[in-house]
Length: 200
Ligand SMILES: Cc1cc2nc3c(=O)[nH]c(=O)nc-3n(C[C@H](O)[C@H](O)[C@H](O)COP(=O)(O)O)c2cc1C
Image 1 (cartoon, rainbow, N blue to C red):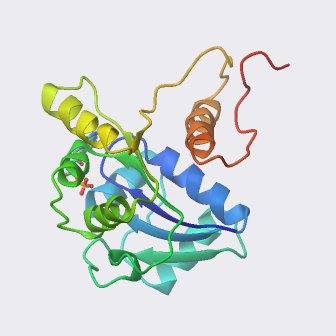
Image 2 (cartoon, helix red, strand yellow):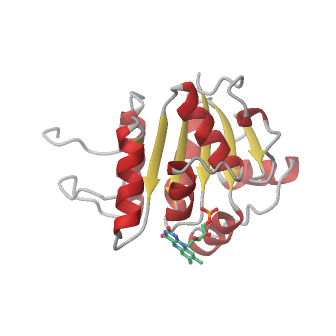
């Protein structure tokens, strides 16, 4: 059983974060979840779940929407810089920002640490722990690319949500599962969320 931080920020593609959250909770991992203000607006628009706010009531709603009875979920506000994951003393196995906006990407690349997403990411970097970003924007400008390079050179995994088509996706779910499967692969978490090349 692992302990993971998932951040859903204000980029298109909240479905990726939702699927990863569901996968972790179903597999009995502990999850700290941060949804930024912009992230929760886009999540509601794209996926239809209203997960705005914080507290036990919203945690219950998330589990209900995901049809998960058990599972350890701790929902944290982006403004809560006193949360456990704001400190290197918290034991977090990996942090995944999925989807990651260009604004959050920039904040992390420059050590801005202005909210709990940026601060927790900063902590993962300073502690030498796995940090995975799923950045989403198109087209990408030189600022975005430079920020990604800065982070990649420090060992941060950059996994843009670019689906492959050799697995012949039949639905949006198949495309989402391909990306989430690649994120899990990058953490060496065994999964069969997508059809691997060369398998039947
Ligand atoms: C509908 C909508 C879609 C957006 N999609 C993206 C996107 O794909 N990538 C991105 O970098 N920003 C996108 N943005 C802009 C970000 O939400 C904005 O920069 C915000 O400040 C990001 O804040 P956050 O990273 O704290 O969530 C979008 C905004 C809206 C309203």
